Structures are given as C-alpha cells and as structure tokens.
Image 1: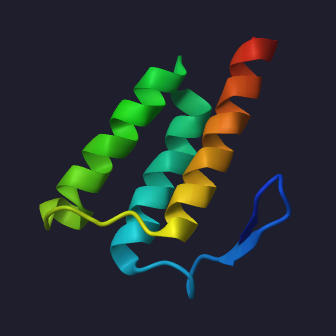
Image 2: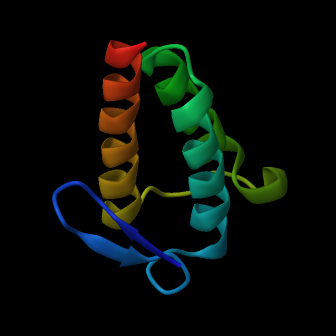
Image 3: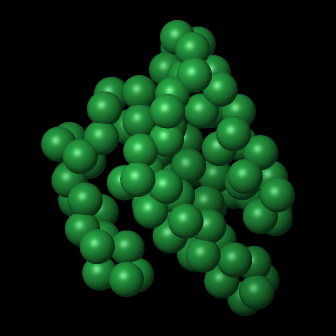
Length: 83
C-alpha cells in the first residue's frame, strides 16, 4: 500500500516501514480521524512509540514515520478547522 503526503512524498508502507512502525501508523491513521485536538493525537503517537508493537518496547521514529505523522497531523488540523 502506498501513502502520499500533501508534499508529494510517497511511501510504500510494506517496504519503507518496519512491522512495529506499520502498527503505529495504523493507530495514527485511526487517531487522525478520531482525535478531538492535536494534543490528543501527539499523546497517542508518543504512547504508541513508547509501547511498541504488542508492548514489545519503544520504537525509534524513522524519518519516514516522522514525515507521515506530520502529514497526518496537518490533515487533522484541517479537519478540526472545518468542524
């Protein structure tokens, strides 16, 4: 599956991310649609990075994960402005 940011950067979710990172991205895609503010989204991201995949321990945030997370945060911000 491919994910393209608003800046036009495209990531292959299977090749560009580790399994733990994909697990975190799944959560972030969900929270981008559910969070009632940016702080909730950031808190959920931090919790997911600390816990890791199935509580396996902390996951180091790669540049690709940072890029996609920032894009999701921007999309959340726009969603909140429209609401």
